[in-house]
Length: 372
Ligand SMILES: *Cc1c(COP(=O)(O)O)cnc(C)c1O
Image (tube, rainbow, N blue to C red; front, side, top):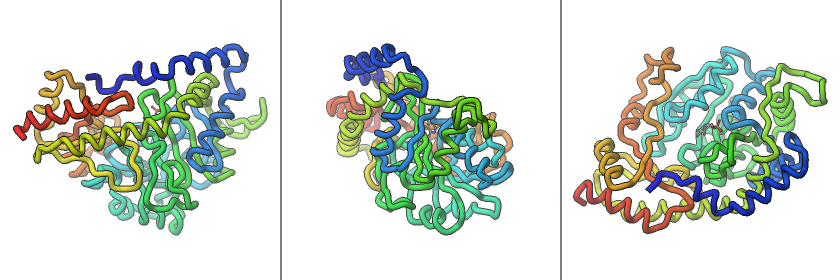
């Protein structure tokens, strides 16, 4: 069993995707035509955000938000941005790339997301933003982050690469509850393996803030609002028409696909009996199960056993941020939960093309490994 069968996932929509591609080819407009605008409107309606801006990828979505805040004078190089140790490195690169200082904090032992209490304790006079990562499809959002966002002059930028379609039990700062509509802005990724995956790279920024939206849009288009008029030192990071057309097709099925993932997660929840395995508990609103991540001290042995029985698994993520070579200036940090968990976590197959029987098979193997 493949960890994630992209060919099969997109194969379900092959005819529609091919039709959408033909329309783009025939239109003669490949950058900044109607398909991107249409998808941005759909994304804004889906998340409830006033603005959605297509970008070249998810990393750029986060980079552009922080770059826009810098251009607007809200942050300056050297200011601090708090983020969790257990995430994909893009979260940190977006910060470092803008000359901002990443402050890496430990994770919550239950959610494996940012520990919001530790994040609050890490706030200094130079803290300008916190990046909660909606890891594995769970919203990282609570009353504490909301209070910080509303009362302390600190921007909350959601890393929403993994949770499109998820909701939180706690209101966002503008009353919304969907991932991407909780803090001041969010960066989304449509990398092919995400819950809403394009057939290439692209991403988006969502926000209710008109000034931020305009600045992000200009920055991603060479710092320009009108052709050949450049207000900022921008970059080229736009969603292209082909990807937007594909995303409009797949967007229609996103809620249904997320529902299938919930079904798979509930099979795992019911069928994995081994007491040695700590199963993930959905802890906040509606989770979209980008990953189903279990923990066990016998992770490596279990992973090998599953592989021998034809089941591919992955580790998200094997190395906490501060242990990467690229982050050697943070290697002195001791973040015990993130460090311990990196050796125990295991992502089981989960996708909208898996069957309940597949999940039962994986669960049985796990039970067998532990003699349960
Ligand atoms: C995928 C991902 C990103 C980056 O998105 P890209 O589109 O690959 O640039 C950022 N953060 C997290 C948590 C991700 O999973």
